[in-house]
Image (cartoon, rainbow, N blue to C red; front, side):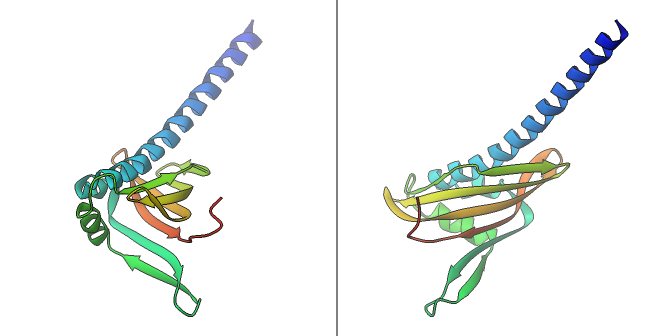
Length: 152
């Protein structure tokens, strides 16, 4: 009887741990999903809510000579630009490849395809680093790649 009670307690504890981990991953995804919903809605204020105050946005690309370059953009400039476009014109379609959490740190790897005004523009991968501040996940760092080929 004692062994059965211990086994039941262990299973309940394991289930609660898995439920907590799943909830953390889901809440990270909710923040990222909110970012792309805001982008599609051209809602810069909603986008701003997704980012930590000291967030960094970067893109890895190539210059005219083919050399790798890293471009940095402020969150305020990005959200202001998104606010000026027509609703439903920016549509970034992501998939979740990996989402990991540990305490107040999360990482997400999301391949994407970006459509502008219904037309394919480019694809790549987003790499997110998120932090949980007062129980809410915020994007601290976002870096992405961009290309027009090898998108399948």
